[in-house]
Length: 470
Image 1 (cartoon, rainbow, N blue to C red):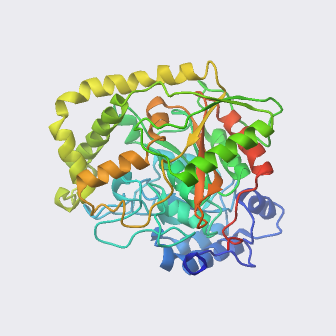
Image 2: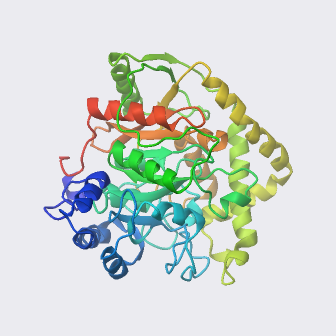
């Protein structure tokens, strides 16, 4: 395990600080944003050859920009943007070989909200092709690797961001989530990952055009307070008046919660022992803290799985059919086997799409009714602990890969379809030391309860640190 673990923690300007601590030190002029940026660049250069987490490096520009950092709650904190989001002057590759990306002319809608926090952007992080897979692996190049053990998957689709944060290269990085892509990499890299309520933030250009918007924006962090600080900063840029303001959530609440426990996935996939143990240990801790936990069944049938796969295929078909609108160099023949397989499957089930879309759009009502009884629903993030690289590679035959993904990503898609907030916290581990996440969901607009509970659990069971792991 020790030989395959990679981290960048050192006695430099970044030290072991999280983003909140760095921003405060910069604000008090105990650290300069330039020395922080230079330290982050050095850390990235140290770990990236092993992790392959950087899609585009803008190191010189970042150090120059740090001399006059943008204002914001996290001003001067080094940061990566996921490579499916336009940042002015940087190419947006979407993890694919199907076109040759060119520098974006301007910041996209999402980037404007992200960067309003004052981050120093070091570049773009990797993702699998168009974020469709649950592992950051490729058909024609090296995968992004998990810093806890480089033989294992880093998850996806925000895999590069997770590797950079977990390894200590940066304390916080952009992530987004269309089926679990914040929470999955958080779970397998020992991080905090909050998928917010649909509509909580500014939506990206493509997400706004979809018949059902599955995608939520956010960040990956090593501490609860960094996630809370990001959302306080984002809210200063724009806040959706449909939902209660978050403000700065700074600690646990006094109220005790009624929590529903989900142990069986919609796909009925078997939950492995390390995952079940992490869930049960967390339930014991919650009850010790005075919360009430009782079993609950999700209000869904296996029809949800088929409907989600139909919509997943629709996204792949849309990419393939309209790729040349995005870039005239787009060549659908260069898409990987998984994207092509999803497209073909959708084409065979095209007649099912209207009813599938109707049913998926209705799920938000059933989801909301669960929270008439419960404050929070707890479950695994994934049905089993992170696999080794190759198991979820896009080179695996399509039917086999789809079956593996359906059994692995068994808990997270509900929140994307229903639009409710959900969070992964690093509360377990496998016998060989790989992180295991536990999943917490709340009703629409109630990120505050999730963050308050996360603070309490973090205090009671401090999250493992990669630099301390044996």
